[in-house]
Length: 221
Image 1 (cartoon, one colour):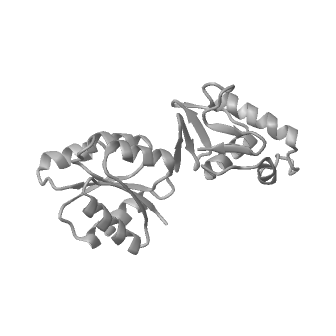
Image 2 (image 1 turned 90 degrees about the vertical axis):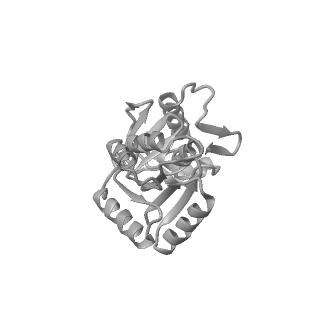
């Protein structure tokens, strides 16, 4: 099920779009402005962005650049019929546009067409200053790719998949195997958490990403 982020400051339009697209089999979330939309992208992966050019907070053009930096497809929603707005949006990397008022079925057709072009593309997740590409299995910090071992990467993806959830050491030990197929023991888990923090945290002694809940386990917010 494709997940779509709707960036639209008209609450009625955003709600109508969400309800319709969910009825068509899509998962949706919405944001009213650029900052809220950026926070949504940082919290979860999306497959496509529906973006209003004219936002009361921030800029649709500016957010388009941020979405395209993550290799996300973008469809502009615009009430402006002038050619200049459309051309500027497409020049900034937008994959399609549709003018308001639009026919819902036409919008769905455009969405599916763009998604087909992006099938097999990367799935990126933002976590603080980290960018995790789950398709390629890579992690970059501030734009520089990190060298993680298979177990370090596996540990990080478990944390990402369980954001906000307290993970006990026992749960982590169940989920992580070393390359020989043996269970990782408790002492080894401590070492891997330490090594991972040294690579992804700005200050490993005061971690901001992987937090220790004393006596209980770890949590990534």
